[in-house]
Length: 540
Ligand code: NA7
Image (cartoon, rainbow, N blue to C red; front, side):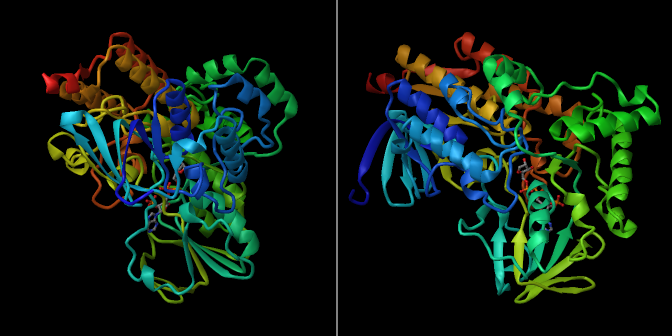
């Protein structure tokens, strides 16, 4: 293919992770032409890149899978309660092969720019291989936790040892055995990788800025009888999940933490701890809403961490100061107990801030830590990073960065005013990151595919979010979040982890309510969107 050649498709898709692959499958079945782009060397998205030791999904494997094909659901057997990254990647590979999805994508190809062209009601897309593609519709399935956050730490580039971000772990692995290893960051990725590294490293130093709330995964082999019982009526199981707050199978507590005494708190929390996983957050229904209830959860963690971690000083540093559930709950295997190992040191960056990285290690305000390997478990420019690093321009050459200068405003998380014919999957303003992602991805994929089918049937070639619909949605999303404690933390949900990023609570809380709204919008002929026959009008 010569450079600067030009191809046209009905639909362009950015990303070949769970979202892009499902979207390609649906679009292909609609009989529309597709060009997909994927910066990775193969399918998988997040799961292609996150190869660090211990990388594992925190949603149970029987739930974290596609539901669009009953045959697929029946034929795939997971081995563990929570699937590890290699198994998830094998699953995605299986899906891509089974449904012949790879031919829709160009791999190792990054979209660098996308411009909406008014006269043809289409997108002009430029990729880093110098090729140009036009497409009537552009679907961004670029991932909401895929733009790595490389912190601005003085001297980071001077480090002469092995420097790696958890989201870019090399496929061939890193030799940790006998090394002095440092990890910066104690969110979900840090909490997973730290116990694994501790087993191999000579010395492990954990640089913690914010202590994490962790609940055990209790991972293990998947019980084949339980798995078969789900498969007997997978649809009913999926339907049940879809009715839950985060599209995750968990029966939420019906009791207020304020309605019971101390002994009962402990009994309920202990039972939730023994079950493990994200459902812990629903042990009492008001933990994320009521300050006094939240205090009770905080004190449970304080006690629990002191019970697990032998050294009271280290335990004290591991106890989170921020409110429970205002940051993503971490699901761990042996995280707190790892700090009982003689080769593991915890450095509290709040007490002794990190001042600089140099060729041979990390320096804090009171000490120097010589290191051979430095792991950045520093997270992502979540929900907007992967879109904003593409030069996306809508009507009148409006840059997405300009449109979102005060925060990412969308309608339903699916579309943006002044960016016609652009759809986002798992975008800000949708529940995505607070849900079982695969489940919510499929809901959005279906909605977009149905919408494209509708537009084709009505010979409409241009769809654009109306400004007032977007404004109302943003206001509604903020109002829902304001009723909880989630919007009060310093989390990546708010963009608080990225210096200079506008503070807006990005996910939409309440998955079932969101789905109902999406269904109503579609059933009423896509209310909130302006639908036009743009190219016909241009010719008149
Ligand atoms: P997270 O949850 O954003 O965690 C990143 C961690 O890195 C967190 O502890 C941060 O502390 C820390 N961090 C970030 N920048 C710095 C600097 N400059 N200095 C010290 N520490 C820093 O990312 P993960 O990859 O763990 O998880 C992302 C999501 O993936 C997770 O929520 C799941 O949904 C799956 P901070 O809290 O900002 O003080």
